[in-house]
Length: 492
Image (tube, rainbow, N blue to C red; front, side, top):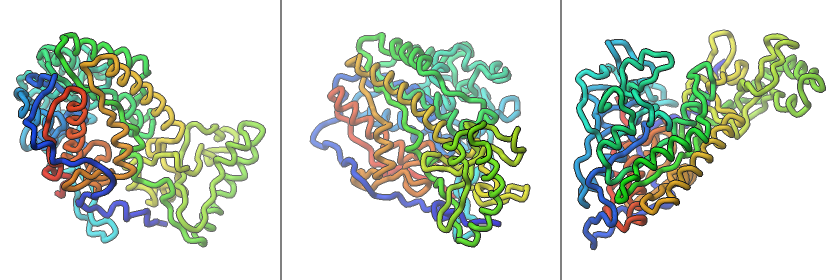
């Protein structure tokens, strides 16, 4: 059987929601732009995909041109800022990369909304067609580049030598990053090398997202990406070395940006845990299919499992919205005593995070006679369970302690609590005078179609927040941009 699974969540509209509290974008027109104690003449931005301008699951030129560092540099230019150069993708490129004409795993083409003809689901995110891949290193990009945001880079990668060496792309595991291979100052260089070579007078550093995010996005399933959480001590070591080197010149100023809670972004909070609507008759029928499973689990209480775990694994449906059935690798493996049908499954709780890509399979045929999320449990990759989310959160909070401590220790460093800002955005939305955004997937205007990276409008909102931080820390006056002048999501 097939269920209608909360399709209203994905009835996609482009209009932004004007909600919540926010800030006026009019600025202080009585004052001329001023850098205060900061010097914007050589501005360098170091980070990952969020710094690069990645959106809609890809790095493409329009996203790069509206990256938050590019927006900052535009406003810095009004207060003495110098040129800001980015390693732009080719005009027609759609995001994916190749080397020697071979596709590079992990590089994607951008998502766009495509009409479906289904009144319940009028449009859905699909990779753009036709796709135009970019050959890494052809033609070679000549820097230096002020935007050193490298998608997929973790904290310790920024210090890694040879991170831009194309030879490293063929190693297992790879020792280079294809996005950095495109524009590294030299094959032997690290990202830090390219940053320090420019002697930046001002910098932003937003680093550490991938240290937890790459583990989380595939539901912490090691069979999908083999990613792990970076130990907080490793993060702290790399981060503090980088900050120390960037601030070695006494006049250099910078902004340190912390790591958001994954639960505040649409990729993890759009698909409800209780996505199965049922009438009583259907619920009763499904319950008969789990009778033997429930009895078998209960029979192992006092042996392999406790009553608490048996209760956790008890599966039951009723009239109304029901939790999806999921696999949970932290449950006790009972297949050795009860057989293959007794897989480690349970129904989701509000603390389990069903990832955005799973929305397309819930309620659909699993190809083996079952229904995903009902008689066939969602896979490990489809859900970041409560335990896994707690692992991510422990590490994230530790990273943020390191980031905040580094900012507090140096008066030349300002701190932007983007984590707090995104929680506010998620809970209440954000208005900016001429409009507003929320984190509602595809409709709220703040997040792009991958559910992780902002839209151009979202990046503009973030840039305005960073400028406020700079004004407060360094006595600058920087006129904000109007986010309404920036785009949200696109149709094919």
